[in-house]
Length: 448
Ligand SMILES: *[C@@H]1O[C@H](CO)[C@@H](O)[C@H](O)[C@H]1NC(C)=O
Ligand SMILES: *[C@@H]1O[C@H](CO)[C@@H](O)[C@H](O)[C@H]1NC(C)=O
Ligand SMILES: *[C@@H]1O[C@H](CO)[C@@H](O)[C@H](O)[C@H]1NC(C)=O
Image (cartoon, rainbow, N blue to C red; front, side):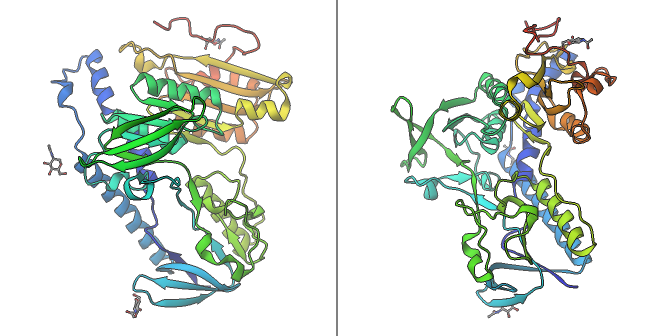
């Protein structure tokens, strides 16, 4: 059996680097807090980012990831073709190579995994002057004062790390931040960002971006509630208004693929389209989480079903994820809103607590936004439907609990788990206050 991968760009995207930088961008904060532990830090004014060394490091990382991927493909005897593909008939794909020449490929099975590309709003100046999160680490100059349009997780991550790196960041929020995520947790994330100096313009949509003689960008936006228009001058305007699926150029009708939703995404339960030998995985799928590990896992299971006689299907529920904002937000399972919709508030018990991470004991940081909650069925043994955690290393915390939720953990079992002291993850084992009780979820020794 021979395998061919057809790809237009490099295999790795810059999204990996985005979260990588998010984790390191708090370095200045750590340096500041180290003083409380006795470190003599010469002068925090000298702790600043060198944009070109940062982008160089990121680009090198992406190059090495791409290199490893290519070596991997070669070792597995998979042919890699750099070209743009389109269907000619159900079993034939035409690849347009860089030099314009065309190559026809025929295959028994075809997997569509074209992913998405940044969506640019239809306003003057968007295409000419704005960048997307894909471009941020190819900027040859520091981003400076930045306007981020969009408050999904990519928008918030970018605004968060730009602010941590010392650049001014303003976020235009069209509806609500982190739409689709638990909204109470989302507000913890944005409150924390606001307290660190990120500005939010709520209910605002962009109108135009124009270039001034100084080279700076003048952005105008509209508050859709007050109908008020505002403008300000920025060095960079970063659009994070979602991504669209790259299905237009695929000439899907030639393959007979008709299961396409209004937004151009492919509808494929069990990753199979309406054409039995044409499959789809990843961000191109309609209604599935747009997360790389989800795509990888679904692809792996599909390959096993196609070629190894396996039957296991991808489970898209209970996929853990983390928003890498300065204070991270990790979650798995249902948000409180979705749980209420599905089960009714009377049938749920919500456990919650504010907590003080141990690393903040000595620096005495104000910790108003370190918070966690468990969404559970009310009837015994209170099966856990969702876990939510805002705080340091939320990604690390939620990963292990995700396995427990997938195994059907109950509140009883969670409360019977012995914590590791002192960690932030142990807070999940200490949860005992329900929202219904009305008791104060603040820790005893807290909150200056
Ligand atoms: C920033 O880093 C680049 C190389 O990565 C170096 O050439 C430059 O001198 C550095 N700038 C400063 C101000 O240190
Ligand atoms: C275009 O590139 C391909 C692959 O690199 C090569 O095989 C082909 O001969 C080239 N065609 C032209 C017209 O240069
Ligand atoms: C109950 O929760 C509070 C607040 O998080 C915590 O301080 C306390 O230790 C918990 N009690 C038990 C018995 O786990």
